[in-house]
Length: 404
Ligand code: DI6
Ligand code: FE
Figure 1 (cartoon, rainbow, N blue to C red):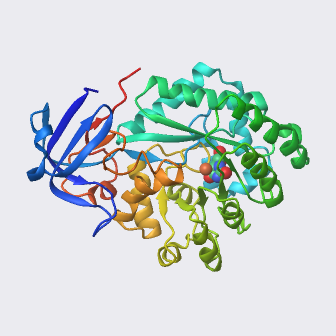
Figure 2: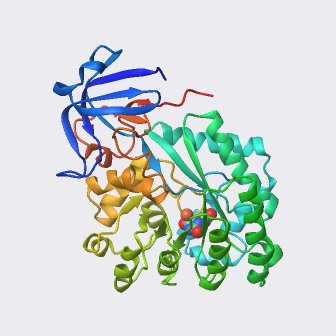
Figure 3: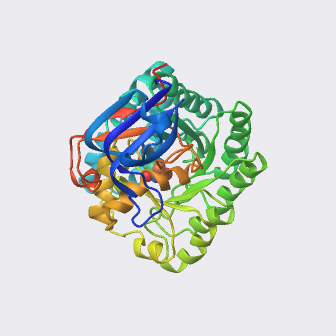
């Protein structure tokens, strides 16, 4: 990016706290300097020192912070279209997982894929997200389930950042499923793979956060807690796939370990929302998985509102429960399925998604000091981003990251 750039002629949804969460400025201007936002405000009050800079008039277009997909599993081999068909013929997600399909079938395909193949497949998904203005993508391991394959997944994920102008945040999710070689020995898997692998991956600097899948078909709260203790000892933040298929009290466990977020949450008991809220963790809603699995139990969105829980929205891009690489579709689904408002949906992929990744001081709002990562839309109002289904109204994407 050029050193200095003044953007004018834009309608800004700065997503800062204000009268409305959009933080709308009708006739806005933004001054970018050395990859950061240096000034933002009304076009009538541009400071004289910036007024002579190279200027780009955006023709009245809408400008938002670059969007953030704060929960994906987008590095994987193969696909599970056949299981999708099985589910539509009557099998449940749990039935399929119980007979060696589900996550384990993706583990086999991922282990068999070369790094080059995994990168090529993941780049397609990343490009889909970029075409919708996404500038930050979280990617989890969890389809390797050996120390080497889990670390390989994170290396591949980090590599994507050198191939596309996005920030990649990597999450250790070895406690995702019990691999076949550990059938019936989940505790041993935690002790021999999930924890020592985490220590090794962290030593290589590959881990930004630690996640787990707390569920009947995956790991118990006690097993997840052991992983969390190891994460804390390494100074790493935690988060959790919690209450996706049943109420395991996982969100409360994540809260107890000062988790950045708990994700899914359809089966979270409303009575537990107050305690969850007190931790300050973000509730990450994944409407794509709800949609694909034909789930009917809704997450307690109004209890989140009443208790002041910040809500984020993500694609959960994965081959089993959410083969979706469209953040705008996830926003639309959050609105239509969960009765999240378009304003909450946009907050959920900007400010609150940044919080779910521990990046609140750099991403997710348009404010001085924040990264110069902006999405410019052919849209008049931010509600349009949640409204259209299919097609991207992205006009262009401004990033401080030159293609490397
Ligand atoms: N919950 C999910 O929705 C994904 N992982 C998880 O813990 C699904 C992963 C898959 O089915 O491959
Ligand atoms: Fe997930």
